[in-house]
Image (cartoon, rainbow, N blue to C red; front, side):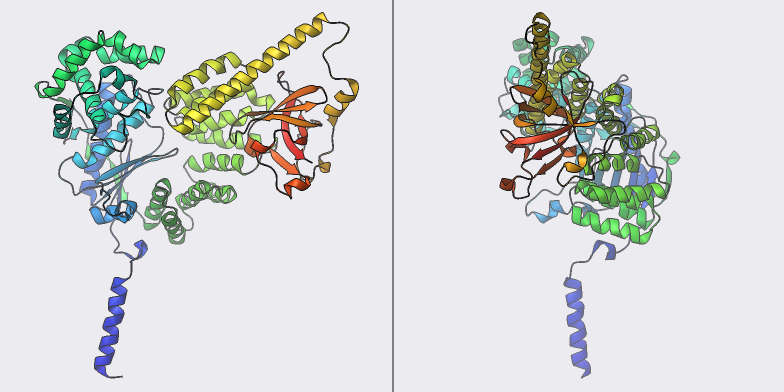
Amino acid sequence: MKRATVLIVLLDALAALLAAPVPVSAAKKDAWIEVQTPNFTVLSNSGEKEARKIADQFEQFRQVFHGGFPTWRVDLGKPLIIFAVKNEASLRQLLPGYWEAKGRIHPGGIYIAGEDRHFVALRTNTEGNTDYEVVYHEYTHAILNLNFRRLPVWLGEGLAEFFGNSSIHDNYVDVGRIPLSRLRTLQENKLIPIDQLFQADLHSPYYNEENRASLFYAESWAIVHYLLLDPDARKHELLTNYLKSWQDTGDALGAAQKAFGNLKEFSQTIEAYSRHPLSTGKLTAPVHSDPKSYSSRGLPPAELAAQRSLFFTHTQRLVEARVAADEAVQADPNLPLAYEALGLLAYSEEHYGAAEQAYSRAIELHSTSYFPYFFSAQARLRHNRPAKDDTPEIAAMLEEAIAMNPQFAPAYDALGTVYSLRPETRQKALAPASKAVELEPGNLRHAINLAYVLLSMDRTNDAKVLAQRIRDAAKTPEEKGEAEHLVESVTSQEAYEKAAADATERAERSVAEPLTLRASESAKAMAPVDRSEVTGNATSKKYAGETEYASEGTIVTAECNPDSRGIVTLRVGGNTLRFYYSKLSMLFVASTAKADSGDTPACKAWQGRRARLYFYKTKDKPFTGELDTIQFF
């Protein structure tokens, strides 16, 4: 081959290589550093000076809440990990979705709140703090969720906007800065009627979470700015009075009338204030910190890859999460964090067996983190219905997680669920379930689980009060659906308890015909059974020392609750029996009916079907027993 031809081939090959996408692992390696403060972890490729600066800014911002609201909790109870990257290209590697869609805004920073960790991703080559407004806004929401059940939308967003516009300097923080965009919105538009603003929820036409430049955000910001910075408002403690009234009643409009007085006059005050809030200026909060005291170290490639995998899983970039997790394991097969990353990825994909294996490996490698214990227990709960002998081990893992981090609310929530699964431990469920709500009052899922724990303990009145509060606080369609289902469960249990009480009263008055099952029906409804007779479930375990019973009849009603308690009623002859299950996902369902063609019917299709229900007797008086298996035929 001639020398010129060789040169052309080499140039073509080089051009093709340069045109091909470069994998992250093959990109130019940056030197990454980890800076650890008392409350935050910063991972950065911007150099140690920039990493310490970002770390100190977050410590200062946290101190604003700690100093300004001494009674508030400011510790998240879980890690907040900050990726502080040097430029837009580095941020794009972490947040590719923002660059994939044409015309989408490229952020300077974002905040991701997760069950186990919170993440921040931001770039350090910015001018001023404006690019971090969204980050500070969402961090404010995280602080509010630690202290309040659910704030009215206007107040939650107003506080987040107020603190989100803070400006952080070397040794002080300016809060209450006046964003010109907010002033322009307020001055160019007619304000939302104040009574409608106070009552707005997520479905209000005024509220649009995607449009933070809207009048709703601007007006909410102006009211909070007035309440926190106006001398007269501060003197009369208007915000404190409003919060107290709101927490007592849950009535946003009533609380405003009580705290602010005549709302027409208050509206006029806000309208005048929103035109010229500059007269109040800003509040400077002195902060004492020492960035040089923070520990730092070079971040090994395996740890960086594991942290990136965790971040990608939280942002639902599961392909990238898999690549990074595999890279972490290859770089250091003995790194516990690498298996935590693999475990979280598997858990998020509902591959619970794989998640158990990964977290077990992290524990074998002497992980000092509480996450492997927590998620391993959660995976076992979701993988299969645990046998009675398994629940102590699952509870022990959750107790270990709590011992390692007593502020981690999800572990208490899960422990309450585990204890509520069995009658012999049900009384122990209340303390951890209540603790989860105490630690994260803004997490409605904890409150819902607490209500079901109360129902399992026959504390129906307490569950009813809590269910009503949950329904009032529910925001999203999913939350509203769960809240309504909880209310229905409470109503169902109330009706059953009343019917049972009425039946008992009638039976005591009647000597001729007691309200009991006829002998033949009683034998059929409460006959001890051999588990091996259940098609396809011959390996199911008996509970130690307990006899299992079976009842055959027609299912009248069935509740479909995958992760919480539900009720199934069965008609046997002229009688109706009522059973409960702890979690639908843990209930074994089998079918020998030809119509099912080997597939088990969905819960919603159970009504009207003939079935045999296998159950264990319990001390729960409103119920015949706890379901273990349903067999259709």
